[in-house]
Structure formats: structure tokens, C-alpha cells
Image (tube, rainbow, N blue to C red; front, side, top):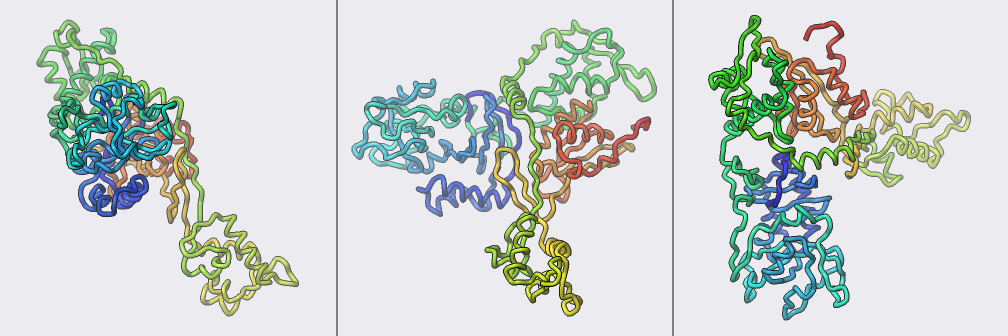
Length: 548
């Protein structure tokens, strides 16, 4: 699917609400599709995954995968079909036809000029500037046969009228580089499609059906355990060759892992010994000792150290240090340019059925969301409009039947006739349902009922009386659990894992070895600038002088 390397950020099953939203977006973006076709493209019950990834140049891309096949991808909030989808629905986009030799130039980065188009008998499609179009090759739809899969790529028109003077159909700048190659999978010859990049095809890798199309590496044919074994040995050799010096010996094995091996882990991957065949660091180091690469001794009871390293061992001398990934460099540069900004969290109030009579005059109905200032204005205007302000004392408001029903308890309705303004407004806000609005930078506001769950930090006990720090609800604040885990792994020099949060659907939790509440507090309060009121559990941090 991609011409160059990419990095998968997350891969999750789509939620029911997101599935319905995707259907609505597809209907809006591609009006030529009928209701049945939309239901077929975005099935109701079949497996559908959302894969978020970074392309070679750092572009954030969201790919929708159905049954292991990529059907749509989203770039900069614009929805595009893949060639797989265009094969299935040839009439999805306006199509321009060109020659195979011209396509080779387009793949190289050239613009499609008007002389390179094949003029159909019915004329060119009627399109406007910015419309999403497709490029097909001669012979794909020969004799009106729409069943033959076209080898096409979505492009954006630069010219609105395709006149002789302007005469070019240019690639949209957002689709330059990697994005240009996202859907160019085959070459056309005599009306038949031949796959030119089978190892990069999204639908042919043998592993997990939800991600098999996104893997282009030969390691995809290996199990997760085998891949983790390779990563473990790579980090081990990298650390010995580049980071550990003779003066560092003897070196605690735990320090070797936390300070040296973890820092040699490639960007976008996470070293987890428990997922390898060795399961424990001691067992892995015993194997390396048997190969006479290192020598490990127990210098004190229960504490092992590396006491010798054979830097002339063939495995160390022949190890090639991997070059830094251009993708990781681009992402790091982009993250410096666009640092994390905390979301804007605004408390709201939702109108329940019991208070609709009070708010309907102002045009609000059941389920409407209001700010506190709006509620105050509506109540004041209602009292003044209905002449409820007490003539003798302007600080009191007489209660009419609607106000009585809305804000008074049953045992008060025959005894309370007037209320002060502040008491009236306070009671009114208490009767409304709580809600909140979260606005993440560059995204549309998200409004939900209830109160926003704070980031929850807890300490848990594991086997052998070991403590771990668990943090939940990061996603609600626009934080990626995997990114947080990677930062904490480096800062705390401790192993981290990301797992589904128990009892919370589609939510992840980060687990860090040891009591790391202090480091978490620094990250959330100082680095991410999140308000303290949205974080609970900071008091569990180790006190000075206490032992972990």
C-alpha cells in the first residue's frame, strides 16, 4: 500500500458509533453510492478496524480495514477510497483515462497534462476545482465492461475547466510523496492487472486479518514471539557495541536492560521480554553467556551483574548498527513543531424532561446543552418576562407553577412561595443534568453527558510483592497511551505495558513497573500542562526518604 516505510500508531476495532459516523461520512463524500452499496462497503457486523499510522514524511493517516482489505483512508480530515474500493465500485469517482506510459511519469511525480488524456466519445467528466477524481488506464473498462478492476489512483484537479490554456490536472499537494503511492498497486497491460508490489499489498500478508495488509516487512511471516526474540537480540548487541564500555563493568543486569537496551529499541517498537521465548532477562543472558558473548555472575545474593564482555565476538563485530528511521526523525521534528496542548474542557448542563417547560420559551428542548451563563440568562429573562420579580424586594422571585415543578421538592411546593436570585439559580443548575465539552487542538468539540472522568493513577500489587503504577483515562484528554508508555519507559528506566482497561470498553491503561507516580505527575502537570483537578492519585507518590 505504501511505497516507503511507515509506522503503525494504533490498530483498534471500530466502535458502533464510529461505524455509523463512517457510513454517514461515506454517504456525504461519495453521493454516487446507494444505501445498499454504502452498507456493503461499511458492513454492519463484519470485522472493521481503524488503523492509525504515520507515513514516511510524518503524515498522520487513518486507514479503515474491512476483512483485512483497506477500503478507505483519511488524510487531513478528507476521506479517500483505496484502489481496492475503486475496483469494486468503478463509478465511485469521475474518471480520466490515460496511457500506461503516462502513468509511469505520474508515479514519478509529474502532473497529468491535457494531451496525456484519452478523450472519450462522451467528453471529459464535468468536474470542479478540488473535486476528487480517479486515473484509469486504457483497456480497464473496455466496451463498457465495468466489472474489470481499474488500476486507478485518486487525484485532485488543479484546473476547474481543463481548458487548452491551463491544460493540466495536477496532484493535490496533500497527496504528494507517500500519499501519491498509497493506491498505485499494479501496472496495466492488455487490459489485465499485474501486481507489481505483492509484498506491499494490503491484502496478502499472512498474519492477523486486521493488520496483515499494513505490513510490508518479511518479518510478517514470523510469529510475535520470534519477532520479539530478534528485537531482544538486536537491542542486546546494539547496547554492547555502542553504549557499554569496559569501565562500566561490572554492570547490573537490571541497569543494562533499563539504561542501555531500552534506549536501543527502534522508534515505534516496544521491547517486552515477557513476549519473547525467554520470558525473563536472566534466561536470555544465560543463553548469551553460553554463546560466550558475556559473562554473568551473582556478586551479591539475588543480584546478577555482567562482569565481562567479549567485544571481539563475531556476533558483536558483525552487527550492523541500524540507521535512524527517517520516519521517526520526521515525527520527532513534527512533534517539536506541534507540541501537545491540553484540551479545553468546559462544563455544560443538559436539559432533562422535567425542566423542558422552563426552557422551551427560549427555544431549547429536552437534551439541549447549555453553559452556566446561558442558564442564568434564560432564568432571569423568564422571571422578568413573566413579571415574577417581587415588587417590594427586587432580590426575591415569586415562583409560578412552572418554577415550582422544576426546582422545588414535593414537600416544598405548598410552603415555598419566593426564593432569592442566588438560591433560584443554584437550584436550577442542580436540577439540570451535568455534561461537558472537550475541544482538542485542531478537532471538532466533543460533547458528552455526565462528568469527565479524571486521569486515574493507582498502585497495584503484583507477584512477589512487587508494585506497579497503573494510569487510565488518557484518551479522554487527547493522550496516546502508547506514546505516554514510551516516554515513561525512558524516563523511569522501567518496563511499561499497554493493556485494555478492565471494565472500560475501547479504553487502554498504561502499567509501569514500580511506584512511578512522581514521574507521572511531572509528565502530566509540567510537560503536558494538564490541570491538577483532572488528575487523581498524585498523593500516592513516594515521600522523600521512603524505599520503593
